[in-house]
Length: 113
Length: 114
Image 1: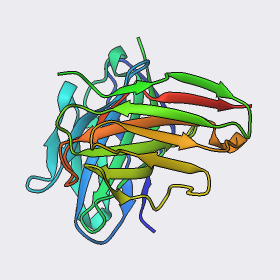
Image 2: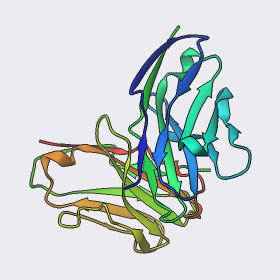
Image 3: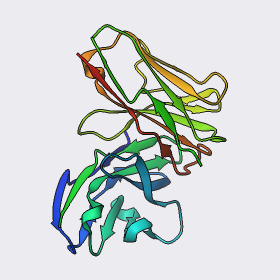
């Protein structure tokens, strides 16, 4: 069965620290990849997405993610986090075969001012 | 543009009671999704509509859950009868198509079953 794994459930960083959140998926075919974010008290919203082309994609608020096909990974990065990045981050995969979204369990990030 | 609307925002019921949730997607969005998000987990797709037709309901517990989108616009999700394990946030999302475009999420309905 297809699945999405997010290795870190809780991450605590100080402001200006670098961030990398892991995401691995299990599906051998073509995929579309997403990172969604949920800020406290707000709706889930799209941070960035990968469909094809350059495997390094840039999203809003300085976030980027790199698709490494050989590792079935789509890790999220930010060179310097801010207090306002405190949120829950979800990786999601849409397989070309089923067009069904599968979300990871989420990573709760807390940034200390 | 107006976002995805959901109501109610919160609902507390006792087990074996029934409950219904309502969702109004973004105008013009053909695809509508219902997700269940249990505390500590990611959203799990329950059902996906394309206009008023069901595309995927493989993870919908059909013995107690039902959903409809009669006119291809708003949708209702019903649970009858509810169980304790149905306590979760129920999220509605919509997208312009089912081919992988961005999903826009509503605020969710937090259901507590006592």
